[in-house]
Length: 123
Image (cartoon, rainbow, N blue to C red; front, side, top):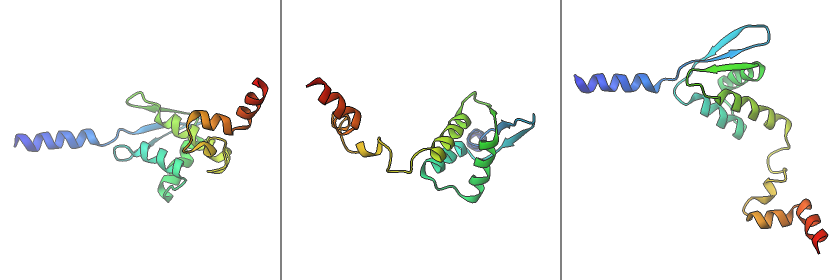
């Protein structure tokens, strides 16, 4: 019996507390999901591979102007920021940082237009 109580207590801790989203009209809506659902939303944004249900949740996050997480965290804010960056940034593989993949910091700096200018200017 003692083990069963411990398992139930552990399962209760593994479920996620709701995240409250606030909107400009003064309304609020709770997002609920299994443990780490916000981290999964974050990864879906980065990979640009959200399920239809995640797409609905991301649309709510995009429209929200504030949030409250029971833990005091800011994962919703990070997801909102990442959504804006992914939607307004260059396509994957076409940013300056993507050209540096696999290079050391020095090699990346030398390969960038700013690095070449700085190198030529110092000679």
